[in-house]
Image (cartoon, rainbow, N blue to C red; front, side, top):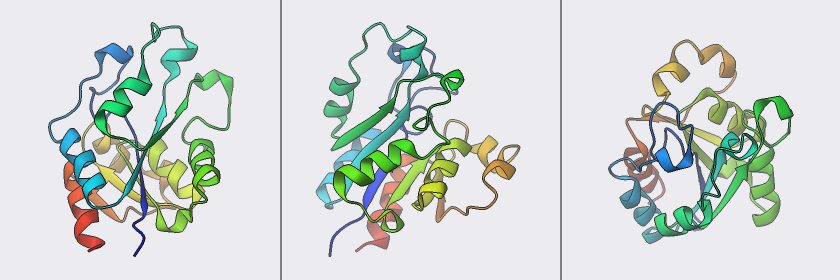
Length: 175
């Protein structure tokens, strides 16, 4: 049985705080490295899907996202380098990054999952036709509360306390 591809947001899902202005302010949450290890050990492809407006704003300082994502064990990553004012089609809540991953890997998005903490993650995945898992780290409370109407047409498959719990749920579901 082929395991589904798991797409994962960075800031607020894998680590960082409420808002990560500079990429060097990011720190992984406890359990993030284990989550990626478990995905790999159980045959899931992991793809990071992340907005990084710090690049457009000149705040990234040449940060090496490739090194970070390689070190954590991600199979691939797609980064939107634009600011909100750029009105691109890759910045979540637009589904552009997910559609780039679909094209590269010939994914059946109805069998893929997006794990994220914000309404923008949920809306992007819903618009692309992927399954949703909301984590309560980062802005999870807002996504379920004041921002819920922004993605009301989509329902999460699961709401997890954090990334590790989400991955453990996926492993159990796909045994």
